[in-house]
Length: 463
Image (tube, rainbow, N blue to C red; front, side, top):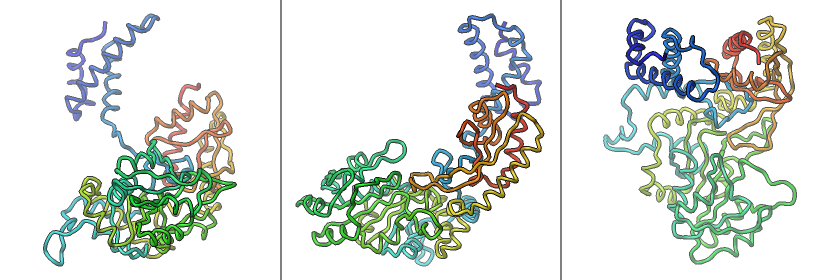
């Protein structure tokens, strides 16, 4: 009873819906629907409703399948989770002028690797190296595609075939099960663990130094904290030790920042400037976390070491493209004035957003949702906490104003699932048996999307 492919394609030709759809997509959609119907018949013990096998019914399924195939895989979503640097949702939002610069650079030829003054081939690092040195106080700088790449490149350059000394309490695992020991192994560096998980002393590092020691490595515990009985060796002491034995000192800051967050009532996080001032030979950090820029791995430090790293052939495999450079340069320019940076870089603005402003947004959105005027919909104001996210500031809980939503006849899991299927998808969280919209990460221009999503949801069959 299932219509054949040829019969359905005949109907497709007469349907205006398919006029601008590529034939290859239509054929894939038709075959997918037919295969799905056959599978349902063979695997379902219950009798199949013959109405589902009519040409009209099958054609509607093909339309739905085509719509799914034509939809963009990478699409915008509304982040209502309260996690500012949400790794799964694309991490940091770029400043508006960075987005505009990407469009300009993407549509035109650029001086990516052309020295305008000398009229010959130049270095792509020149677009941001001066800014990075100006902001951080470092002698030299370069950028690769992400911080894991930056760490790998530095270790391979400075410690391949030699021991890299690192505290056991700093052998971190970042997202996606990437571990510092694994990165070190791939780089060719030989891991030399010192101290214990919770306490590492100066003499542990000094006692580990041998003739084949190539690097003293310090890794910032950006995605976890050890509390209680613990001790770590300050970077300044490691620098003094490295200088004494002529061994370079490297610090991986992970979610590096140029801003002292303690000035805004948040948890103190070591800044890149402090690491450079302490004398680290090489400092690595991310561009798309607390920095608030595009995905990038930034390396700053002493010129002699950065020059050596730049010459490493692996650098080419890890280099960033012109669009990333365009976004990073505009983001960095804001840091010339820290106060301006906090206002213009979305990540910094969201992290430091005053509670009163969040409360005003929550009240405004609550009013719009209640205006749907459905007695089943319950929308409560709640005082909950937001998170920095992105493996940053793990102990930080930022007070926030949220909307806790329940709908009579629907489970909270059903609500969460249905909102993920809206256009654009609304991504929130579940807490206290309510669906939570955290207004710290929701922008006012996104209110219509949320209102429309809940209007659609109220017309959905209750579950």
